[in-house]
Figure 1: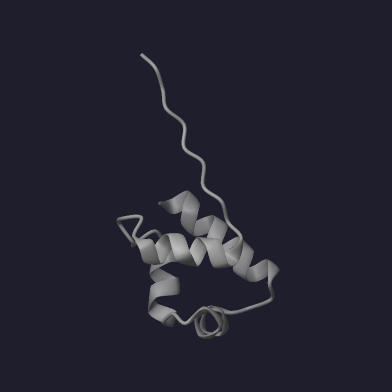
Figure 2 (figure 1 turned 90 degrees about the horizontal axis):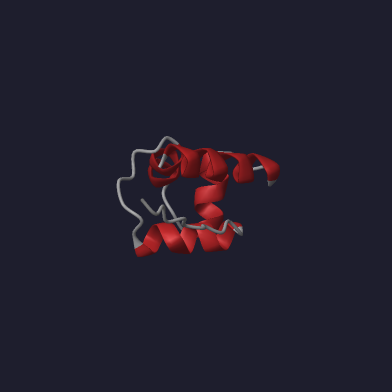
Amino acid sequence: MADLGRAVAARRRNLGLNQTEMAAELGLTQRYVSELETGKTRSLSPKTFDTLDQLGIRLSFRTFDE
């Protein structure tokens, strides 16, 4: 989750927003944005996916064969 948090923080900075501004624009709390950016969110909830979508961040998953 730390890599995801870094991506969210980088996108926010690219948009020229602080956490409070981004939270207001996306209908979130500043606390949620902070927890997302610092990797404190432990699951990929629908709220997380919606936030990533609004920010234009796409996830990709890889599987590893043994």
